[in-house]
Each structure stands twice: as structure tokens, then as C-alpha cells.
Image 1 (cartoon, rainbow, N blue to C red):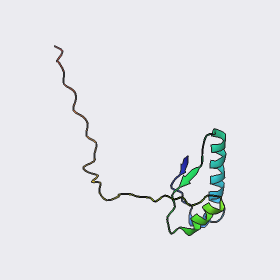
Image 2 (tube, helix red, strand yellow):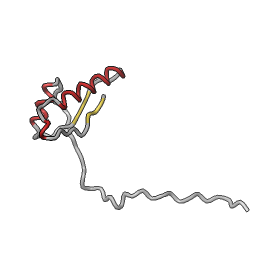
Image 3 (cartoon, rainbow, N blue to C red):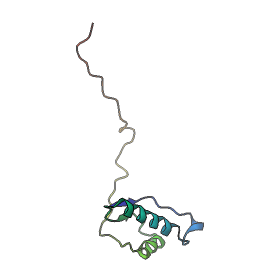
Image 4 (cartoon, rainbow, N blue to C red):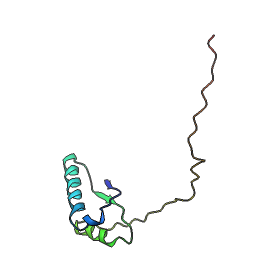
Length: 92
């Protein structure tokens, strides 16, 4: 399964086949590689234009919901700290 992520087409290029050409290229790459079962992507619930595009290309809405937690992580507390160096017998 390949994921297509962070698709953004600038407003002046929308509805001109930009994503269609990208998607066709991704399909060709997957076919050449072999073993790719399909494609998935996220789309905003209110982005009906993009949803229409994906539907026109043969994609369908999946039965998944997205859950996320974007508020509970204290980024300053999550900084990776180096592990202490192991101490062993000194070599004198």
C-alpha cells in the first residue's frame, strides 16, 4: 500500500489535470515496481473539490476515521538527551 501525502495544488493550477498527471505517474511507478496493492491518501472533510477529483480517478472513500492528539506533547520535555557514557574499569 502506498500513501500519497501532503498534496497541494496552487489555486491557479486546480482543475487543470495536475493531480491527475501526478497520480498516473505514481500508478506507473507502482506497476513497474510490482507488489503494490493500492493507494491511500488523506483529504480534508470539507475539501469537496479534491474529493471529486479522487473519485473521478477511481478512488473511493474508505471506512476509516483519523484520530490524532496534537495537544498533549510538551515538545521541550521530549528533547532527546544523550545517554550517560558507560563506566567500566579504568585502563591505567
